Length: 119
Length: 119
Length: 119
Length: 119
Image 1: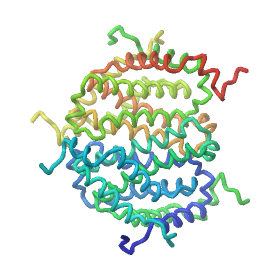
Image 2: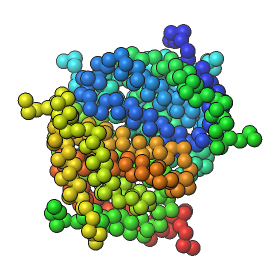
Image 3: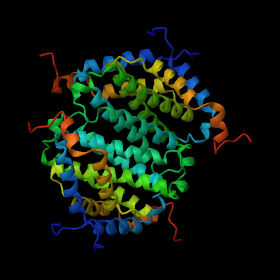
Image 4: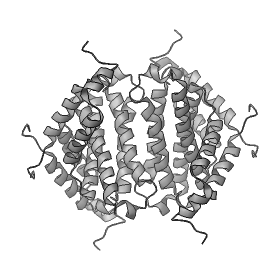
């Protein structure tokens, strides 16, 4: 399933090494990491706050690069938090998808989807 | 480097299939996904808002499970946004780490770290 | 200029009394209050995350009521923070408006406004 | 109850005039205003993300000024949203306090408050 690129475990090790080299783990309580993460999430939101939905899907290259960097920052803090709490982030997301599939059955969601395109 | 567990590319394919089965991609403008992501980030913050830093690092199992599910939701929306914008999220995070390493040189950060433990 | 209704100073006194009656001021460090405030802001965002801009401006009464309660929660935490930091919130907002007026001259903003309606 | 300072109705009129002079009301859908508001809330959070709770309560003058400006920005967007939705913000906050008083009875909250100081 992988395209042979870097995988998540490699990134997690790199993030950990980055933090430890600066001894920033002493700031990395889950409370603080959650705050840092939402600050980065807001920097992502800021790119889109005055854009229409259409405009937000047609980014110029420089904007797309900037958006990608905000997304990277979110993943980096999310990864530090996963390390701190000893949570397997990929497995947690897969388990949540399975839970969501029970909560939001595909047929029922399709039937009620006001933006459905296939009819 | 991988531990043989599921990798990120597999998760991304699963998230995409989940969304397409419900035709939710028609709601998934980057503007909307950024909003959904920050809402999940706030649900993470909510777990820690009245906790001390120490308490936030000593979670009971039920709380840790709930926190993990909020983290999963964040990763799921981040992944949908990466798919929508055709951004390689893992590579973007690695590139951002390299950029951060230039901005925050390890030696200088260590020297200025008020919570440094090794002296 | 007032319509004779309750003014902000009255609200601030009521918020303070509410907090002190529960001794919650001991949880109300600025750090914690900022977290609580952004959680409420996200509950506001959640009402609008899948809505179009147009839909967000045409709320049914029950939704408008719910949105008003989230806005109330934001103002309540903002007021507790103002009390905690001894900041005159109304005066701070007026000073910021004056600063913004210098940063964003009206004529220049009008000339560059892509959604301007009067021409 | 007022100290004779500016009241909220005056601020609301000033915010409205500021927006209309730039014709920014055409960007001010509730969806967009909620996004702008949470971005300002995150700028507030950013000031406190690595601070301890104690440090967050002992701000130097320049930091306190900066924090006050973020609080002002939040109130300004909250006010624009109240204008847009025709919601009386002060009255909404007072109504929410009354609702909260029923949900969180003072005696019970005091009895369960782990940070209570008076015993």
